[in-house]
Image 1 (tube, rainbow, N blue to C red):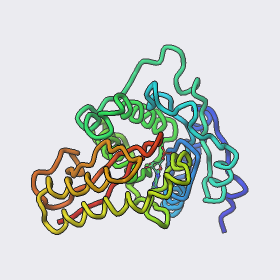
Image 2: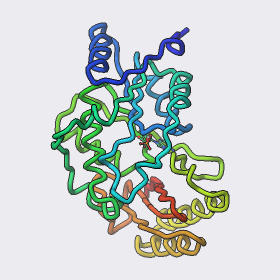
Image 3: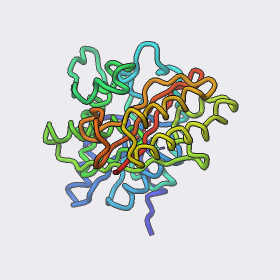
Amino acid sequence: MRTSEARMRTVSSPAAMRRLSARWRARGLSVGFVPTMGALHRGHLSLVERARAENDRVVVSVFVNPTQFGPQEDFSRYPRPFRRDASLCRKAGADALYHPAPGVMYPPGFSTFVEIPDLSAPLCGRSRPGHFRGVATVVLKLLNQVSPDRLYLGEKDFQQLTVLRRMVRDLDLPVAVRGCRIHRERDGLAMSSRNAYLTPQERALAPRLRAALGLCAAAARRGSAPAAALGAGRRALRAIPGVRLEYLELVDPETLQPVRRLRGKMRLLTALRIGRTRLIDNIAIKV
Ligand code: AMP
């Protein structure tokens, strides 16, 4: 029986993280890595559990990365329940919780960023300029510090997954990327740390969001033209009181470019606001 529950270490400096990972690798142990911003929920834990099943050692990072938030976004109010997160990681079987301080990750004079422009510009990139540059930069730094064999990312953040897969490919990073399916609440709402911002009235709209996406996906699967399927989906989303649609798009899952014809594997992606809360979701479609 594993005893990691009792032994999970909390690591807060890049040097200590590197030493720990080097010791493991010197013993021939494989390392799985799950980067997060904390406020952990079942979706995050499903990634930890998969990493647990596929690796000898598992590292979870909790770091609310300032460079991926815009000036008007929720960086300062993003939830940071660190003790609860640590307890959840321990129970899920993590061997190390990596929790670097912002000043350690971005010391004075920090000025190097990773850009993946073609995949970062569309979809969420339109309303969040600089977001994926911040994500790619912090994930590259974390990969250099943790040196994992496998990187676990959720399909929930599909554009992020696509951007990071491309970074790993383009920069020859020695890590295998594992995309993990979306974990949802019973009524279909994709689990997210930001769901905690929703008022009970806003939270109650989740089944309508799910229905609107399902309507669009079903139309696409039936072979409607992309414009017709998206039109139906957009109308259904806009009809939900309090919802402001940012985008609903049907894209190629590798290039993130809009599809012209419904063929092969596609992804239906949306971002919208309910009140003050921004939510994203997506569905795989194969015709
Ligand atoms: P975050 O803490 O929001 O940066 O998310 C950390 C990781 O967990 C990312 O790879 C997310 O895609 C993933 N994730 C977040 N929510 C879910 C979910 N509901 N299902 C699966 N993975 C998720």
